[in-house]
Amino acid sequence: MNKRIISIVVVIVVVILAVWAFQNKGSSGKPVIKIGIVAPVTGNYAAYGSTLVKGVEMALSDISTSTKYQYQVIVEDDESTPAKSSNAANKLINIDGVKAIITTTSGSGNAVKPLAEKAGVINICDCNDVTIGNANYNFTNLLLPVDEMKLWLTEAKKRGAKNIVVLNQIHPGFIANLNAMLPQVDSFGMKIVYKDSFAGDNRDFKTIVAKAKQANADIYLVLAFPPSLDIISRELKNAGISNISTTASFTTSPTPELYNGLWFTDSTLTDFALKTRFDSLYPNIKFNARTVPYGYDIFNMLVQSFEKGGDVYANVNAITEYDGKVGKITKAADSHNFRSDASIWTMVDGKPVMVTN
Image 1 (cartoon, helix red, strand yellow):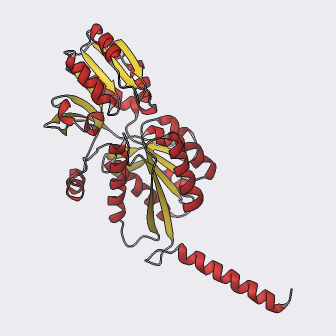
Image 2 (cartoon, rainbow, N blue to C red; image 1 turned 120 degrees about the vertical axis):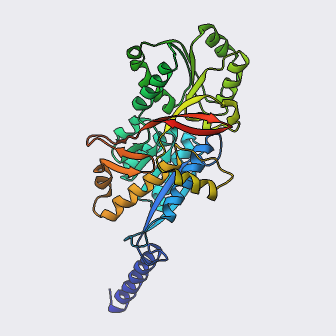
Image 3 (cartoon, helix red, strand yellow; image 1 turned 90 degrees about the vertical axis):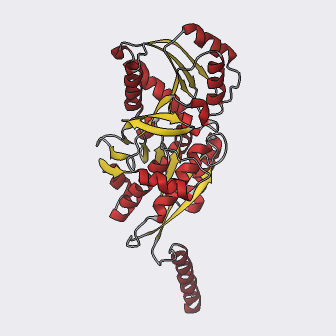
């Protein structure tokens, strides 16, 4: 190879490196860290995905200008459909080159889990299926099912309930709640007198409701997303059953007034200024205590881990306490699951109101 050809090759390499450097520098001139979001921004679970995205966007706008990196968020809508979740994660990892992914709902988190592990890209799921945290590079950050269901049983007992009917949608998150609840029921001196499961696309609950009514329970726990939640709740009320409860889902209903006066468990919000700001920025979107503050906190936990330098996975895994918008977030040293406190909420004039934790 003569000197002229060598010179041309050198110039080409320099140009390629210059283009690469330009593409990976933000407007601030800092190296860019890309963080992906795989979430249901549209579809039946949009109340979770769209609000998670807004929480992350609020955190992004609050980043200090003194950071070492410029952060870019890339959103992929998966409609909480496993095939779309996988395609979205593949695109974010292999085309966009994200260094971390934030997911919400256990369905999305489970679909992204093996891809994140294989690629060595962190996936933090705003969901309660703790099995997601069994794999390297995968974490969860939400209420732990065992904590939430303990509070739910405590409140139900306080209100005089002894016999429980459980109707649950077949979904990883609700199954996690149910599995966490079952071993605790006896210790509260309570009994599940009837339980039934149904697919997320089920719209006919006549038989289930008829059997549930025959059980004559003190309280009916409906673990489901809208529209199934709303259909079954209406049929229960039409059957004369009004003592209905859930875990958070009332707040995502398009007709929340259906649940006025009913109580449920949800996350603890310790920074109500975040909600006030959210309501001002997005007046047409309902605040979701299960996604907005967690999206905000998860993004900041990732930024903290990137800014620290070195192995970002090790940095995230080393977090054992974090003061967030949902209060103190903790994680055992041998766990990939972050936990926070649950609270009792009630629906008042179609709006969720936190009562106590």
